[in-house]
Length: 307
Image 1 (tube, rainbow, N blue to C red):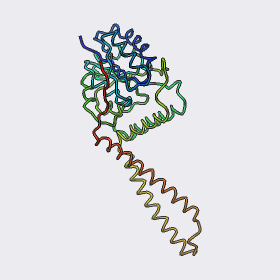
Image 2: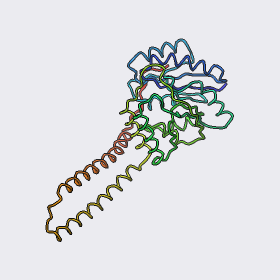
Image 3: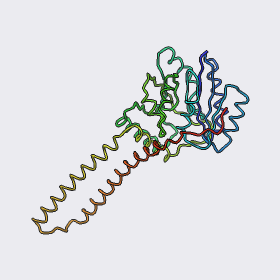
C-alpha cells in the first residue's frame, strides 16, 4: 500500500494539535493509503513538544521534528518535506484552517485526473481585518505582474503532492525561502481547489500585519528582479528631470535676471529626489542582503529532537 505523509508545521499550537489530530484521523480513515503524521515543532515556547511526545507514544504513525529554536514556517515546511518519505505528501496547518476533509477528494484528483499536485485557495477572507485583506490582494496583484511564477490569489500552503514534485522542491536548497513561489516555479500540473475561509480552532495567529508585510517583501525579492529595473528607470527619469530643470533655471535667470526666486520649490524637489535615491538604495540593499545570507551557507534549520 502506498504511503501518505502529512507534514504539519507547528509554532505554539499545544491547544490545536490534539483537535487537528482527531479531525485528520476521522477525515482520512477511509483513504486507501498508509498514513504518517510528521509534525515540525518550530521552536515553540509553549507545551507543543510535550503534546507531540505524548501523541508519538500513543500512535506509531505520529512522528515529530523539533528545532533548536524558531526558524520560521518556511524552514519548518522545508524540513517536513525533506524528512518525509511518503509516496504522497500533504502540507497543512495545525489550526484546522486547512480542512482535512478535502484530502480524500484531492487524492482522487491526483489518481483519476492525472495531476501532480492539488492546491487550495481561499475564495474569501471573512474574519480578517479589511486593511489586511486589502494589502493581501495588492500583494497577489503585484506578484502576478512582476513575478515569473504562477501566483494564484488566496493560495494556501495546503496542498497534496506526488513524490516527484516534493523531491523537486527539496532540491531547491536556497536559504531565503518563499514556498508559494517555489511551488509555482518547479512547475508540474496543479489543480486548484477553492474553499471558504475558516477561523482557527484554537490559539492565536502568529502572523501580525508587520510579519505578513515582511513576508510579502521577501517573496517579491525572491522571485523577481523587476524592482531593480524600476530603480534604474526612476534614476534615469530623475536625471532627465534634473537636466531639464537646470535648463529652465538658466533660461529664466537670463530672461528675468532673478536666479534665486522659487527656492522653496527647488528645496522640495531636492528633498523628494533624495527620498527616491534612498528608496532605490533600499531596494538594492534588500537584494544584496539576500545574496549575503545565501553566500554564508548556514543551515536552513537545526534539529534538536526527532522521533
